[in-house]
Structure formats: structure tokens, C-alpha cells
Image 1 (cartoon, helix red, strand yellow):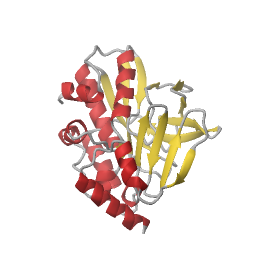
Image 2 (cartoon, rainbow, N blue to C red):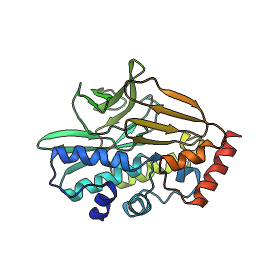
Image 3 (cartoon, rainbow, N blue to C red):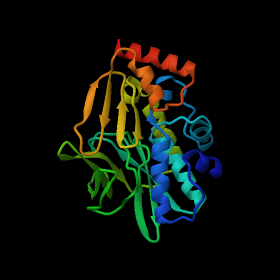
Image 4 (tube, rainbow, N blue to C red):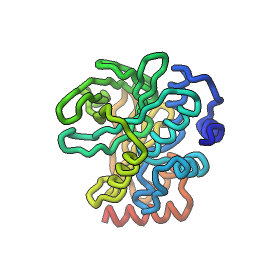
Amino acid sequence: MDLEAYLKRVGLPRSAPTLPFLAALHEAHVRTFTFDNIDVLLDQHPGVDLAAIEAKFVTRGRGGYCFEHATLFAAALESLGYQVERRLGRVGDVRTAPRTHCVVVVSVEGVRWLADPGFGHSLLRPIPLADGAYDDHGGWPFRLARVDSPDTGKAWQLQRFRGGEWEVMHTSDELPVHQVDVRMGHHFTSTYPTSHFRSGLMLTRHQPGRHISLTHQTVTIRQPGEPTDHRPLAPGELEKLLTEVEAGLTPDETARLLARVDRISG
């Protein structure tokens, strides 16, 4: 990959593959690129091969969803000299949910870390891949639990603290992941008729001191230690918010997205 172009986009200089730089790069990536399913809704997704993702994220300044984030982040880490593994996970009930989430496991000085740059409310920095691991960075508490079962084998459940309780985000397993697995997961997620990525807008971004999440009907703003602001979108507000979160859309993409949202909201 063009590592220098990626590092320039996220605003960091090249560094040795240390744990502090891993944390810095993870946060820079999450803050630079949106999580969104816009290309899926517009029926223009370029696919999940690295060259297509680089062109979309690094050159055009767009964002995307987990398969893209994990592929790009893993490639950058490998180029920097980190030992990297990709893993797939299930969002929801592990007995029924497909393996449609992608995370990255990074080994630094003999310790494995779970990196998750492509979730709707992503970790800002990696968390140790260990049962009971806990991290609170920027006021966002997360923890990790080992949850082995006949359905998953050895597995890890990532949880976040919200509304006074721990909420399960996803469960990732330890099976090897190849590029064909990522392509298959992306194909299902982006084309299956009942996939929720096909039926509504999802667009999120970590901004300084807050996390903003947009759907085709609502806007949700979370700030550490403050009540969640969750409300319906006002008429015409989505176009303004697309600019505010720096979604990186062309005027034509914006127009087509707003038209698609109107049809979905119907």
C-alpha cells in the first residue's frame, strides 16, 4: 500500500512498531474516517480489495464499514512491521448472526491487542485480548470477555458501558481469515435483500468530545458523562449534517443519497 499517503491522511509521521504508536494510529484512523454504508445504499461499492479501499479512503477522503476499515488498517500495520491477524465476528446472537464484522488482532512484544476501527461506535484505541480487559479512553468504557462456546469455539465478546449497563457490541472468534472470507462477508452484507446495510443509512463519526450517529430518520449525539441526545432528524437537516461530519461526498452522491433516504423513509 501507499503507506506515506495513508499516514499523511491520518496526520501521523512514520514510527517504529511500538504499542504507543499502535494506539495513536488506531485513534487517528477512527477520527479521520467515517463509519458508513453510503456506497452500499448508492449501489456503487467498489469492493474490499486494498487498492479500491485506498482510492476511496485515502485519495477521496471517504469512509466505509468494517471490512474496509479493517483491511486498510491491517495493511498499514503490516507495512509498519506489526504482526497482524484479521478476525471475523458476529453482531448479535452468536447462534443466529452471520460473521459479518471484521476486527484486527495485533501482537506487540508478546501481547495480543484487539483493534476495532470499523464499528459504529468504535474503540478509540486497542484493548488487550484478555478475559476481563478494561479500558476507558476519552470517557468511553469498554471491556472484553472470553466467551468460548460450541457455537463459536474460542471467542471474545467486546462490550461497552452505556446507560448504566454493559452492552454487547460483537463476538469475534479465532478462526483464520483470508481475503476470500472478507469478500464473501462484504458480498452478503452489501447485497442480501434483508441486510440492514441495505435498508437504512448508518453514518457515525468520533468528533472531539462527542460521538455522532446518523440514520435516515434520527441523529444521536453522545458525550462522555452526559445524557444521550437522541431525536428525529428535522426536515432538511441531513444534508447539513453530512457536511458537518465530513462524509466526503460529491454533490452528485449527496443528491442521490438524499433521494434514496427519501425513498427509504417513504
